[in-house]
Image (cartoon, rainbow, N blue to C red; front, side):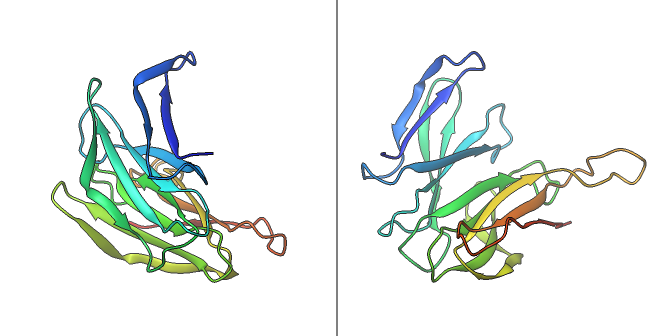
Length: 185
């Protein structure tokens, strides 16, 4: 399948203005997600290519304001020093500033460790978050990544204003289904 990104309303009908191919190929799919990178009323679309042996970990983003879809030229980069097996991407507000940071993990290649990297986008440039750059599991086959604000707020409720990183081992029959939660505040 090609890297075709579409958006749907809650009732399942297509949002016609969001239908595009994220990468210049018709194979290996795409992994889209969303995050509010610029604090407007709309989440931006983030994408990484599927796990093809010829596709690098290219993280891209598009801005949709309800009427116009435009690529965000500053948010288009390779998250790892390779040109194979795609990546897994996620947007998350890990530092509590109401802007989504960019999280990336390598795709399921046998030569890739279970690394997680974080990037900050301030509207001008993408910069690496030095403290979010770690190998979270031994072995290879990349990592899956997600995020949620699941930590206690300290007064009996949940949601401390920071998204935690949820990471799982990459897809290999030799790996167990282990999940780790990483905290960055």
